[in-house]
Image (cartoon, rainbow, N blue to C red; front, top):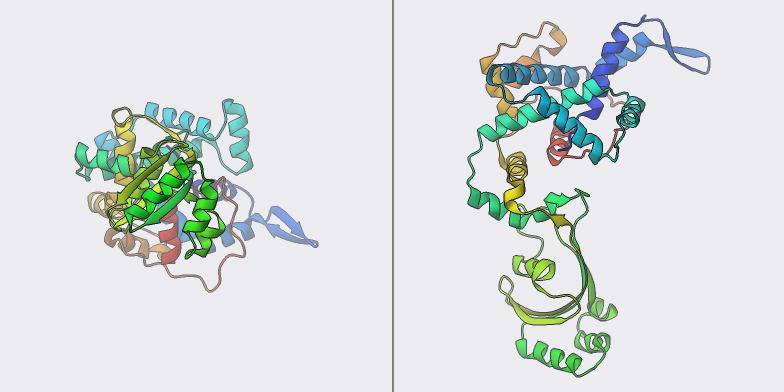
Length: 351
């Protein structure tokens, strides 16, 4: 499992470290003018104070829930930490720790992040009812999400593609090619009314989606996706096949198919369920709203008092600053988990 929140943890760790430093101690010098630790800490509070405190409150709510219900053990956190290290290409822990240090991170901070995400995932999973049939269907539609190793690259198919509402027209095309005619010349003649496919002599490269949202129209007809990704044999004419969703017939010859290795459903069912929960389970805000009813929240700093109501009601009340920070702190990597990416976008859009 991969986790988000690198920047936030680096921020929390850094602010905590600076709180022990002298406020007037230089942190940088620009053109002879000193920027002190105090200046830095004030700027961090101004731009990220509410966001950091919100996260700290939510983190404490999760820890209290875990203490009460024992969702996640220290051994699980350690195991996920080692998995994360390997997924980022490190076998030697000392090298990984040096890498983290260059990003302003520590092992303890990363493990806190992992524990946070694990507890949140368990709470969301607890509130998500899903049967094996639904999970298996989700897996079949989104198998590329579970590629080994998880490269994040979508599958790709390169092929010759002939399409028509007239099956007989495709049968004629097939007959010409099987008799020895050049498939590119046949495609050129066939697509006289389609300049794009005529220019490529019927050859296309199609990227298949990593994830299909059942609530949105599919990017390609499911019958065509199954044909290209799985059913059509390599380097052989296949068809004509009816694409029932569009009432078109297609004839294909697959030249190249990049499909990552995926373990069987039963072997990775827990990971499939976790992915399903991340996409379709209750949003994290709902979980924190429920926990806020169970554990009292009292914010003593009047600048951030609004966070009490915000967490209880799931309504983002924070308002944007008069101007934004001049630049974002670089992240360790791009957000590796879909959940983390959606949370980041939702939070940025709300402010």
